[in-house]
Length: 386
Ligand SMILES: *Cc1c(COP(=O)(O)O)cnc(C)c1O
Image 1 (cartoon, helix red, strand yellow):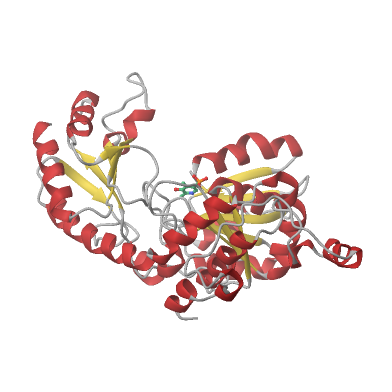
Image 2 (cartoon, helix red, strand yellow):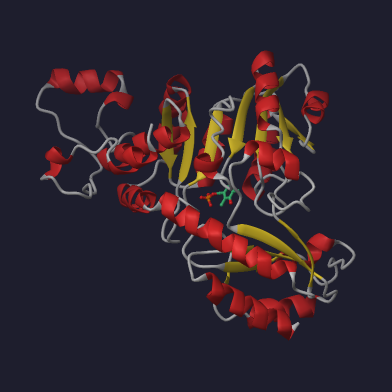
């Protein structure tokens, strides 16, 4: 489906709400019926109508239909955070005694689920390098039921051969799920690559304004219905109508924001390449990137996040760089209007800081919507302070 049509028209029935261009926020917990027969019918399939907003809600539904189309999936569910979407997607597909193979170092709360929560229910996880199909095959056991991918990740941008892994898993009856937050379905259509469950955090690029959280899980209608009827309704982690409305608003400008961020990132990279304070940088579509060829094959673009490795070997010098930034904000997250910087060493104690490890000297930059020269001028003066 045409992207403009998804964003501007799909699922919008303006005659139902006074022809308002922007849909109303159905800020209601419950919905009334006139006939007992109608409420009985609604109970039969809660995914078909509005009963109670822990299930379906009209504002959320507009968003849901658009996001499913954006993923090229039959259906999707929208959660109140990306973490909730991941949790529901995994939980719905594993049972006691199962084994998961996951790419190493997934998003921190996913790792916590695999390491701390699921073992309580007898579910174990093996982490793999993930860069080759063989690494997945070697870790697969008779009781492996689930593969978890994150390609690229959001710090070192490690990539997995998505199509190959998904094809092998499908042959083996193993369910695959991917965190597609970095590239978004616009630039990496993972459902087309035969992944069963496509997840992205809506907090980042879909929201785009750093004012709400949200998470998307897409796949076949049958899978989404199964999750809706158990984890989604049971945990109560669906998105709230107002937050769904904010995401609808963000969605209107998604392609134009991504194009801008893409162009600005290229300008910032050109600047970074010349800086003597920088040892190297990580960016999936730079020829220096270890998995450059694979990145080119499966991603239409890379943008936004760039990790720089500073030459400075003292923590204090890295602190000085980050604290000298006047416009880039020091914060977690990304995908909003504002450019950001986040030093890895913020999470590493002085005693554990090892300057021989380039990652310890890394700072992740997020390029936002400001004028690129504004970002570059700020980076330049802060690098000079090192
Ligand atoms: C932020 C993020 C998440 C979690 O999303 P929330 O909306 O914050 O719960 C998952 N994966 C990646 C790669 C992220 O950056």
